[in-house]
Length: 118
Image (cartoon, rainbow, N blue to C red; front, side, top):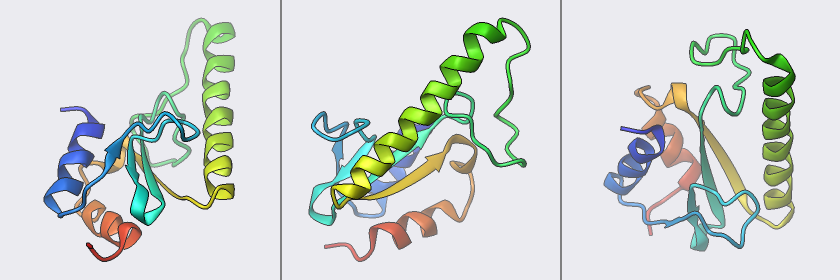
């Protein structure tokens, strides 16, 4: 199952309700909680270049660097711009990395971010 679907199911089981990929928001967040003004992005460690040294899923491509390096840098630059624009518009942003999806403490982190169920 994809990391995004795993997080979506976890959040739903916890009793939170959300909207998917709201096109009117920068970056089309994976999950949008309009009443809370909160969004969650679920990022793949390779595609969004997770910078945690302990992450086993991120790596630098070994071939065709002229293609991959600028592409991955554009992704990270665009991600930062989207987070900044969302925060400026009054939204709280949480990024869940692919390597964090199987961790036990993810549910606690999500609950801390989302707050009390309404």
